[in-house]
Image (cartoon, rainbow, N blue to C red; front, side, top):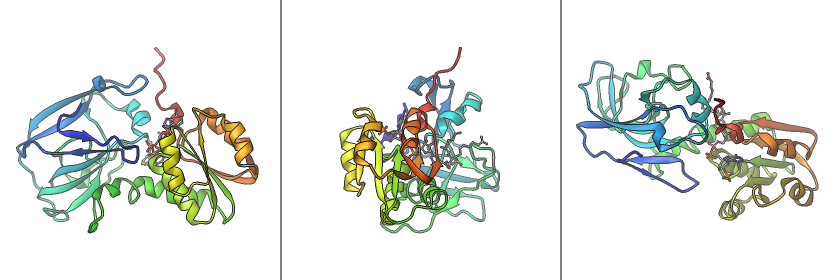
Length: 280
Ligand SMILES: NC(=O)C1=CN([C@@H]2O[C@H](COP(=O)(O)OP(=O)(O)OC[C@H]3O[C@@H](n4cnc5c(N)ncnc54)[C@H](OP(=O)(O)O)[C@@H]3O)[C@@H](O)[C@H]2O)C=CC1
Ligand SMILES: CCCCCC(=O)/C=C/[C@@H]1[C@@H](C/C=C\CCCC(=O)O)[C@@H](O)C[C@H]1O
């Protein structure tokens, strides 16, 4: 799909590691067809262009990690076709005519799916329409820079603040998480364990459930292989105090029927509905 990209297939990572073939050209992945159901390679087109000269105020980057996130699916509905696919990346500054960015800085920002993007940070728009300047990252020392798109970035902040501020879990309470093996859900579970909670994770496939257990999840449920309602009754008889909902739909109706009085729900996302087919 993106010849210079290597897709990291592990479910723990949703990043594409890009590698420059040439510093003279840049590769962009254009969004050319609105998704109908699951996104397909034919919804995108790769173009290679000569890198233009840098203007005053502009910065040139080399993409290191490009993020693929669930919000892209619903947000793409309103986007015009033929433009560069939007999204965040971790990138290194290769050239700069902007006083606040210097060669060698690492940043995280919404430069989209491109290997060598150029932008004016002061006018760079996020996919949601606001100006969001790329953030210069501190020295990560030996830690991987991809963490700026994970636990140290948007998914980590979502997990931490969604759980602690919206659910406000107390030690001993039971926290249930849907989409538990994803970037956000797996962090919510680990934070909840640190706060002294019992943690229930709902995900699909044994390898993911095993991984969640290795992270300390107390109960794991495979929603494709097991009856969630029955499993919650059997394995979580004390009921659920906090539900961190990443999935929505039928699964949420089931979990909600197991909530205790004065329970709290963080409606983080509704991924079960994102890949809906268009109504022709
Ligand atoms: N409110 C906010 O600010 C934010 C909200 N979000 C939302 O959080 C949710 C998770 O995001 P993130 O962790 O980054 O995503 P990931 O892509 O990392 O993980 C999503 C998980 O959802 C599960 N999933 C996918 N489709 C379905 C389905 N039809 N039914 C049930 N489970 C499904 C998959 O696991 P499995 O195969 O095991 O089912 C997958 O592990 C999304 O809904 C997203 O929109 C994310 C970031 C910020
Ligand atoms: C549109 C469905 C979003 C589902 C939840 C989600 O994944 C949120 C992610 C946010 C994202 C905001 C996403 C959409 C907002 C659209 C607003 C608009 O004006 O159209 C972004 O803020 C990063 C994630 O925290």
